[in-house]
Amino acid sequence: MSAIRHSIISFALVAAVLLTGCQSAAVTPSDASAATGTATPSPFPVIPTPAAESPVAAPVAGNPVTGVVARYTLPPTPLRSIEPAIANDRGILLGGIGSDLWRGPGDPPTQFWMITDRGPNAQEKVKGKDRRAFPVPDFAPAILRVATAGNAITLLEVIPLSGSDGAPISGLPNLPGHDDKGYTFDGETKLPYDPSGLDPEGLVRTQQGDFWAADEYAPSLLHIAADGRVLTRYVPQGLDYAGANYPVAATLPALYARRNSNRGFEGLALSPDERTLYAVLQSPLDNPDKSVRERARLTRILAFDPATGQLLGEYAYQIEPFAAFDPRAKEQSDMKISGLVAATSNQLLVLERTDDVASVYAVDLSQATNLLGSVWDDPATTPGLEALLHPAGAGVIPLPKTLVVNLANLPGIPAKIEGLALVDAHTLAFANDNDFDLGGFDSQGINQPNGVVNEIVLVALAAALP
Image (tube, rainbow, N blue to C red; front, side, top):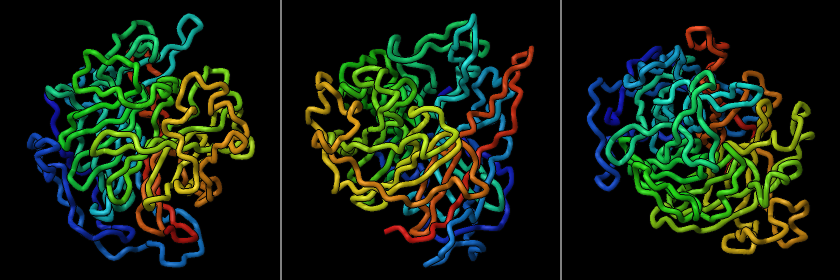
């Protein structure tokens, strides 16, 4: 089917509205300029934006208490209800929408943008070996506009990603030897590689209405039109995406092709002036190989000019030691970076986590070494950046970190927090990835869910951000 924007009838739309924020009118994808593409008109009625009311639990200036002030849950939503072209959704509900969370300065105070990852997938044990199974291989990763009210997440728009010809983009692995093989739901039958397939994670939206997303596969950066068409995919030099159903530019550092499997770009931020994108690798690169995973703590944040496609900078981010961060973690590779927000022109907020524990740190770009074009981007450099245990001794100053909030002791925080958005100077929003609540398949190939839901959680900060 051609990619269309679906407006979804509300499952639960109630009148309570939380939190103050920017009060300007909503900007929808149909407002995008011609330069980003004109969206196909939706055949469904657009749900009106809920009217803003007086906040009932909003944090106030100087609030000394950090805590959860609101929680919203996505009601059960069959996959085929949002993507009718899916042949068999195997009883799987919409999920994974918390891969990232975005709220722009012009968005209504109760609305967010979210994005799914590559779709339902899991490890299946076959003949003693793990295989990556895709039970709904025709699922198209999608961008969603949602409203939060009462205790519900309401879908306002679903925008499946599509290629240049309007055909939906799959979430299947791209390249033999670079990506895992994909299999059917039972792990028995191999699926074809798809050079167009995407595993989107980070998301931002510009004031013009187009999107940028971060992808784990390549890793890559995606420029996406308002109607979901991929305009350009930026990948590491040396990777060949011949046959992709959209333009591909191999302009990112070649070294990034050494990303830890399924841990490419995970978080994405847009500077307040919209002149710079920041993309962060979920984990340290396998540089020179997988042997560094046991101790590596340095991952990379790349600065990118969205107007020209040029690289602007690169910074080392030092991940916390796993044992001190989460006593339940078993190894350093349990630590991940999952969210990124640009609070100011020089300050980023970084979401660092295991599956059970998450914290947000503020980092100052002006106080760290810009590594772009240095020996640390050269694959021949030995030891590589990722092998450094004391980077300052090698002339590398990582981004200085200040703890903003530790979510470990806050009640009401779900597991596997991946999305992070800035609501206002006193409030952060978080979203979880419920992995489509896969719980195994019965004899008919129907998913048996565990009851894990997607949530948006608002947290008041004890001290205001800049």
